[in-house]
Length: 399
Image (cartoon, rainbow, N blue to C red; front, side):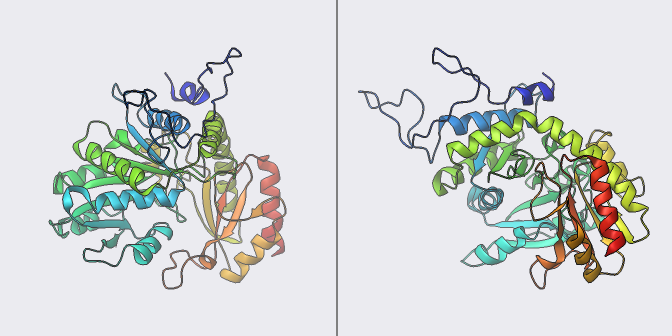
């Protein structure tokens, strides 16, 4: 089936009750009865390891990454996107009894290095990591070839990147990693480009992770993270099993009600993302031409250095609902622009129905600020695009 058909029916299972309700049921059980012979006929033991509602979400999310594949991918869900990030890193740090080394984007989401520094930098075998510009294949190759062969090396891609909208060519970099060593894993943070836009497992990645808090949930009311592994690539199978083991042992799992909310969001994700992309393209063109905007970052603009790569791996029609722009005049001017927005809300996060704006440099950790001082990040929502444009125009003219 087409991806939009899968989304429209995501998690829908008529209940066993006489009413045959279509909305997915919520099973809040934390423990499950054993049969007299000691077996678990329902397949569930304890909700830290599995739960019927969570199974429903994981099965639905797995199908979206490889909708045409004969073999189903493996999805593990977590209580937040950062819990999913931790599970992937922890899997790399324990697979085959070897420690981990990560090659990260030089502009990756600040939460990833913050986690590495704050929680994973101590102990006998701390996780090591380094940064690379993922738009420069030669630089990436040098980092991969220089990695310690005694560690599990994981190439970490984030595309489009947060907040500079840089585009990493997934297929090219996955092939590059394999040419250096078949033991190098490739994981893609697809939070900004959900499966309706990009499916990294089809391009050679072993794992894809999402902060399902964003486009999957879609209503700014649920925390959740997802990790989906390739069902046939050797590293995808190995990493997927290890991520699932981390999920069961650590227990950072979403509640059944959280899973229900994400399943609800999935069923409208296709139309929500499409609407956000169309509005983002129109707003990016407006901002790119505005005299008080020094630079607009959006892969849909023909002038964007990653436009060709984005067109190739995002279907050529839509380029995401996220954009950022730099206000002429720097940080103070950017903060003033955000302050003057009336319809657009000043808040972090993304992927909800409401459009959000955020001055990124002011929330990034001191000493690790990747955003230019005048940069504002915008998550385009579902409002009328004319109203959004008028709000931005008023804020830019009056700041």
